[in-house]
Length: 222
Image 1: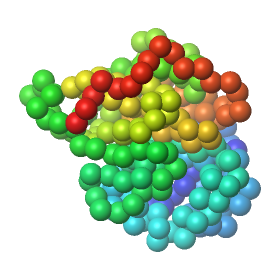
Image 2 (image 1 turned 90 degrees about the vertical axis):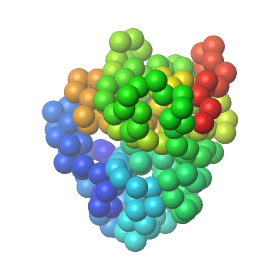
Image 3 (image 1 turned 180 degrees about the vertical axis):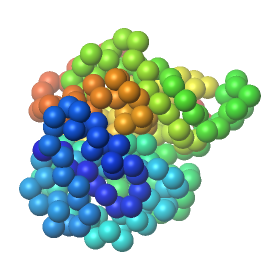
């Protein structure tokens, strides 16, 4: 069972449709009571960081989510702004993030982006996994995903970097710490590749062994 956290930010129906095609049961949580019994959580997000954090805080679900993720070790995946909310802070706003992963969110340096349209980073791009983790099973080569963002996730610990993408230099496009996952791209808009990833999350065993490939830290520095 996948529980989608609906706090008024993010296209919940797109995820419901993907999981219907995959024949995976889903539940939509709009209150703390709806979160009872959650087995796996998806935290979507679009728009401004402070707005998303305000919406989540006002939903009444914040404390229960902290209990489930930090105390109950329930697997969770944050998507786009949902990933950025898992950091401690963001250059986009003044509010504190969830702090589920030791990271900050920073704005891209336009001077390093060699495109006419510099920001936002919008459209299809490669995602290169740098950990052997089942979330990217079947996506290790030639997988592309849809992006729409102007800020990137910077992990304070390189071991938390799960995948990287190049946009003016490599940056963290997926992160992982214990039962917590974050992806900057939109799997619900990424056709077959997104369906594979969301299906992998539904089957994921977070207690499996994770090995790190030959990789040190992202080359991107803002």
